[in-house]
Length: 400
Ligand SMILES: Nc1ncnc2c1ncn2[C@@H]1O[C@H](COP(=O)(O)OP(=O)(O)OP(=O)(O)O)[C@@H](O)[C@H]1O
Ligand SMILES: [Mg+2]
Image (cartoon, rainbow, N blue to C red; front, side, top):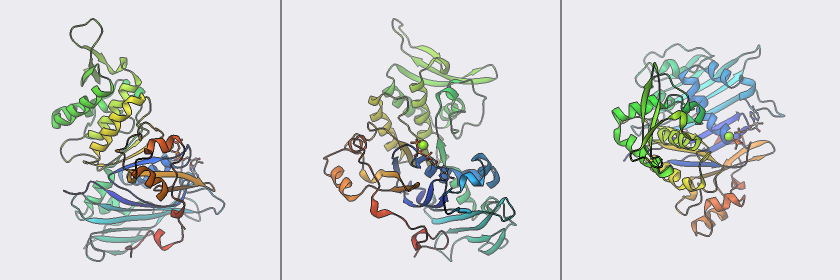
C-alpha cells in the first residue's frame, strides 16, 4: 500500500515565531503546547505554500499582513524567511520543494531562490531559480518566471512538475466555524471543503453523489457524538442552500427535520470536522488535512469519537491537528510518536517529539498522553534544539 504521508519533513527559518524548525511528520500528528507558542504558525508554514501556489506569493503575504508580519520579528531583524518541504507524491516518488523570500533593498519582496527536485537528485525533474532566473532545470524549455512569484506556478504547466503543484495545493486547512456552517450558503463547488466550512452543504451533496459510503461514515460518526441525529443532507432554499438534519424529538414517532440554523454549535462543528476528514470522492481528496482544535465545543465524552475518526482518516490522508484537549489524548491507544510538543524558548518556537523519559512513561502505560498534558508534562525534548545555521537546516540541495 502506498504511504499516506504527503509531507515527511518541514523545515522553516524565520517564519513568524519560528526561528528554525525541522519537524518530521507521520500519518497522524498532534501538535500540543501552551497558548501562543506557535502551533498555528507551524500549520501556517504549510498553508502559506498552498496559498502562494494557488493564488500568488503577493496575495499569500498580503493575507497575512505583508512580509514584515510573516518574517520573524526578533533582535537580529531577519530580512528573509525560508521553507523546505520534503514530500512523497501519491505515486510514491520522493522530492523536496524549497524557497527563500526576502525583502528587496528598495522595498517589496522577491523570491531569492527556489528549488524543486523530484525523484533521485540529478535524474528526475528539477529546477533551481534565483531571482527569476532559471539556473538549472531538467525541462527542455523552462517557462519564464519573475522574482515576485514562485516559479512552480508557471512550471506546473509542464506535466513533469504538475503532480507536485497538485499535491501541495490539495492540502486542506480547517478552523471550522459553526456560525458559517449555520448560515445559508451559495451553491458552489463541493469537491473540497473550505477552511471555515462555508461550502459544507455543497460538499455533502458532492459526497452523496460521488462517495455515498463516506457520507454514511460521516453520519455514523455524527450519531455517536449526537445520538438523536440520524442523517444530514443538503437542501435548497431559494437560490441558496443549507444542511438539513433528521433528529429524534420527544413525543414524535418519526425524526423531525431541522435546518442547520436550528442545530447546536457542537453538532455543526463535529460535522465540519468529520466532513473535513472524509470529504471528496475516490482519489479526489486532499492529501493532507490540518484541523485547528477539533475538540472545541464538544463534550469530553465525544473526544473518543473524534480520536477514532482522526485515526481512521489518517489511513487515507495525512492528518495534523492542534489540540489543548487532555480528553482527546486520554487513551492508551494514542501512539506517543504522533505527538509533537510545542513550546517557546527566548521568544522562539520549539517543536519536537517528547523526551525519551516521557515517551517511556507512555509506552509502559503509566500515563496516557492526555494525563501528561493535564499535568503540563508534554514538553519538547530539549536535546532537539536546532541551530539555524547548521547543516541540518540547509534548505537547498539534496540531504546527505
Ligand atoms: N512575525 C512574527 N515574528 C515573531 N513572532 C511572531 C510573528 N508573528 C506571530 N508571532 C508570534 O506568534 C505567537 C502566536 O503563535 P500561534 O498563533 O501559532 O500560537 P498557538 O500555539 O497556535 O496558540 P493557541 O493555542 O493560543 O492557538 C504570538 O505570540 C506572536 O507574537
Ligand atoms: Mg493556534
